Length: 104
Image (cartoon, rainbow, N blue to C red; front, side, top):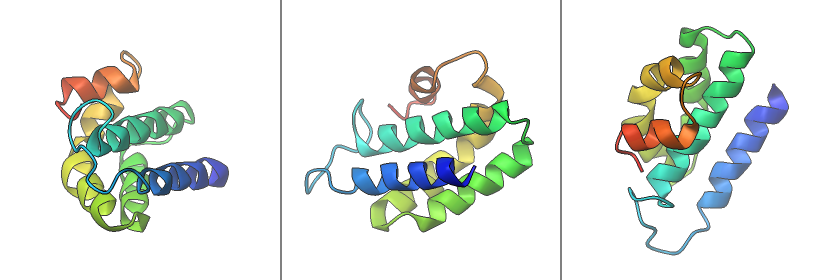
């Protein structure tokens, strides 16, 4: 579990090295990448039978360790959708979920 958390954090930090003015909402943009990464992480947590409340806590903790704009986007634009992501994760891919939430 700690490995997964560390991997997700490093994935987000890696995103921070995108171009100086990254695209925010479209496919391949920062918000889309954050959403898809969070959705994939939610799927892993759900497969471990972790409750929705615990998943929300994990994602909140993850958002709070991200730097600058990524932390803001994660907290403001992705965290509010964790319940929707959790409910849909068994029926849709991370990409499909984020597109349906208009985050990609």
